[in-house]
Image (cartoon, rainbow, N blue to C red; front, side, top):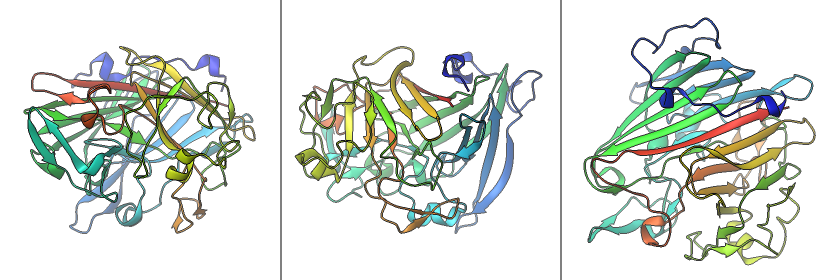
Length: 381
């Protein structure tokens, strides 16, 4: 899979799907999305798994949490492996998942003390990470069953996912209607288009929480993966991993990935920020800022397999998490125990705790506005 052949093209959401294209087959693209029963929740709610294949990429998605259960791509010799951590059953996702592959909302990342003030009114959110709110609270978007429809459009195949979050859910104001489109393009790119509307002023920050290991799920440490991030600054955090408000330069620190280096090269350096995060768990301030169309921000490569992941986004931030809290208690889809550093996350986003930092890019959404962001993952081998 030559990287030069993998181009970022408009997904189905950008193209404007019609009822006629939802769930229909086409002559020239990948396979029509296939749906099967994956399991049931304790209350009997069915959870389905959708399978998509296009352009050399194979994707499996759950209706529960919009979770990417697996994503298979070939290595330099054409051999496929799943490169996304996950479970083989719904019970583990419900009981013990650290957000494996999930859609995150209403607010990706942390909000300090679970509190913010908007238009003069204070809100208390669900607190689930010490004193802070993480990834939408105790029951964020990752813990709900989404409505899912499969589609084909030209050379693309994909899924449209819908979830409505009621006013007051997890403490957030406004009824938020979220729509997320997963598209596999004819080039094998995986594109995510996020949209949301609200009936009251609120804050929103949607993202995807895939745990990547390009050598293959369960194959061991990602510390030898090579990473480059187009960012000269990051947002330092306090001991609770809440941004201090500073935009600090990466030069001369373990956080400098402006030139490609291995993930593990500086991860054991005695730096206070690494001590706070038990490794890397920080937001990078992307040089390009917010853009109308996805622009390249990061490249990840596994030297052993030759697999690569290139990320383009419209978002201003990228949370790089080095799998620090994987502790050997979880068994994944391949039957392997997941340990610290066995995967990493690259979450495109607005900044953590933005509602409490007026100098950060705003995450406020008001009635009449539509929240829109897009991220594209391109693969090579």
